[in-house]
Image 1 (cartoon, one colour):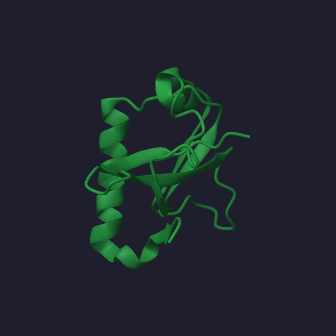
Image 2 (cartoon, helix red, strand yellow):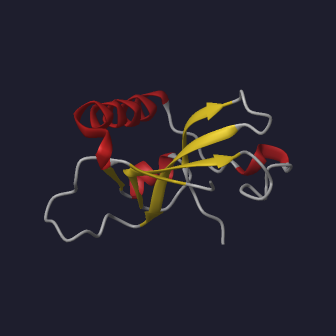
Length: 116
């Protein structure tokens, strides 16, 4: 099973470049609160289709730093490098703005994952 993530940033300084990824999961956000929390973006049919996906949600409260290698990205050597969709400029700005607001308000709301 392939997993989808949104690449927020790339660090090319290390010998193996590192990617900062935003967590995504199938379907709408299913939390216990009535409202979608700050940092979560739901992608319905139309929005998901625009990035080549089925409905999903992105949770900017959960980020991961991972190496850009075949262990994490098995299709890296294939044409297209495993990229299944590209966010348009407006969506990129929306995501970056939301993430910046979260960092400014309280960076402790963001959980960092990935190999150590």
